Image (tube, rainbow, N blue to C red):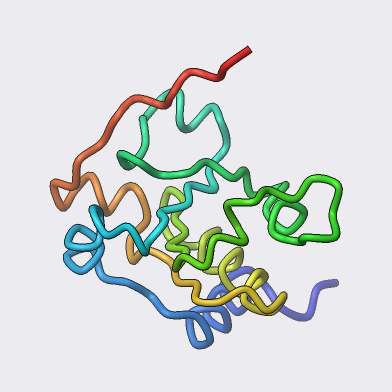
Length: 133
């Protein structure tokens, strides 16, 4: 039997991680010091698109991509930018932002309402970039 459910985990993460409002996030879209990070599954990106200019880091690989000692490390996470994570509804991104913040990566935040909220608020979207071979 579990002693803590998803609701409690997300609530804890939300209390420890900055949440950026949809309106504030729209204003940050062209800020070179901010990198939007889409942690959704590739099937979600194919189906729904993504925020223009966002970097895709699948949730299952995020900690490995952030860790400079990992063989899977991605240099983008050593860029010194502020990382604004998002998922479909702001639950996975809360957990992911807390995880990488706990690793020591700063500054990090997540998007209120996720990609669903972004679309409802009229935020721009684009197709998922095709992978290079």
